[in-house]
Image (cartoon, rainbow, N blue to C red):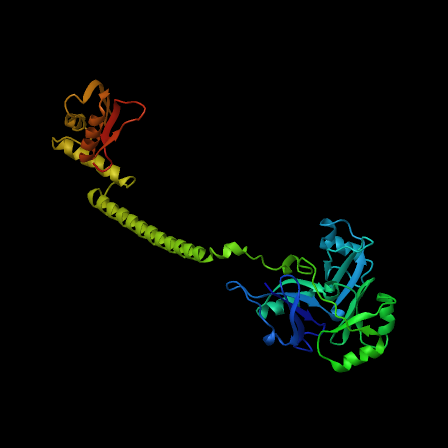
Length: 386
């Protein structure tokens, strides 16, 4: 997949809207290049609705380069370690600066470090994202050079030599600075944006060759770490499951909505039932405090039945009547106890008889308790609503 590289000068976008850009293929080869405003930036193909990715190369005086001995990575490349190592070399305190360490070490073991003001970098990243792009990395222009050379962009020149890179003004002191960066070398000059007057003046200030040197950013995010880190993209294989995942999420949301409505309906029905029971209790027993209305009404009904010469639901005979519904031979009684409205039975109970007993108890509104571990032992009692 091709990648767009945006080369942002130090005066972009305050004083100019256009910037140089390059399109590279997956192997890093240059496919196209130009200089235009954001509306004309070429957009590589993207997968799904993701914004197109790009890499930022910062040019001009907004970025500085240093070389410093650092501890071994990865701990040695952490921002706080780099800040401590450069504290004596920076004019300002290192806290408002952001660092990018080139993963390719120099011959003497030192590391090339890019420095940019954090506020400037954050503003650039935010603006590029607002323009509909997703920056995946940001590096100094000098760190993207594959060899010694010079790159003109705007009114500055990025010079890369054996002693690192430096951003220089295109003025009369240019030749002296180039001797410090690349002593005795004739650097290839590449003009990143069209400026014939500037390019002609550069040829007068110093001697350059015309062999271009390719740009290839180092691997990694560069300056973009911490809160400026690019968002993690799902792996390519996960994109095939995106429609199914969206459908599953919609189904789950619909299921949650239906469940919430059903729970609300059941809660409303429960409140209505409790209100109906309370109304019947108040009508039947207006002078009695309501604690457990169902049980209290059952007790009052049993008392009324006994007063009228009828069996209450928890009387011995009413409970024992259920035993008569069991087929002959299905139940052999060994012991029968009646206490506090409960009939406790011990005996031998066949499997078919157990089903008959459960059905008979349910028809009479009685409660049957039969521990699974004690076959042939069960308890009959009146149900709550009897």
